[in-house]
Length: 185
Image (tube, rainbow, N blue to C red; front, top):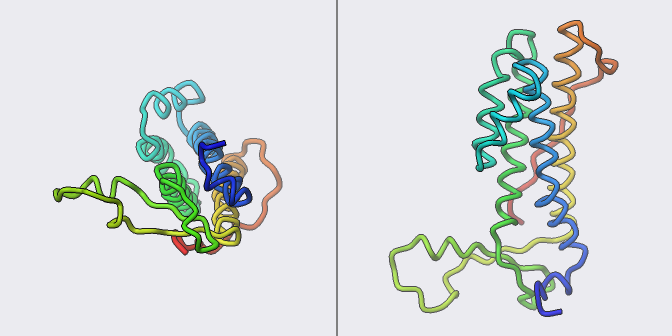
C-alpha cells in the first residue's frame, strides 16, 4: 500500500487520529441536542446548524440558540465550559484533518500543514520551511480523552438543564472536569 505510508508505520497513532477526525461529528450531534432541548426542537436546530458548511459556524449557531436559555436556568458557566471544550476539540480535529503525515525517522509520526507555506507571499521551492510537529500515542490518547470530556460535558448540560426545567433527566451528577491537553507535543 502506498497511500498513507506513514500510517502503516504508526498504526496506533493512525487509529487515534482517525477516531478524533471522524468522531468529531459526534460532538456536533450532542451539541445539536443541547440546543434542541432549549430552543425550537430538533427540526429547527438541525436545519439551522447543518445547512451551513463550517464546523466553527455550526458551534456558533448552536451557541446562539442555546446560551441564554442555559444561563436562565443557572448553568450558563457549565454550558460555556462545554462549548469551549468542543471548540478546542475542533482545533484538534482541524489540526489533524488538514495535515500531511510522514515518517521522518525520528521514531514519532510527523505532520505539518501545507497551508502554512501557501499563505506566504514568497516563492516556495521546497517544503523545508514547514513547521514539523510530531505525535505520540500518549499525546493522542490525552487528546482523545478530552473529546470524551467534551462529550460528557454536553451530556451533563443536557441532563442538568432538563432536570432544572422539570423535564425527565438522568440523576444529578457532578460537573465533568478534565484538564485541557496540549495541542502540540
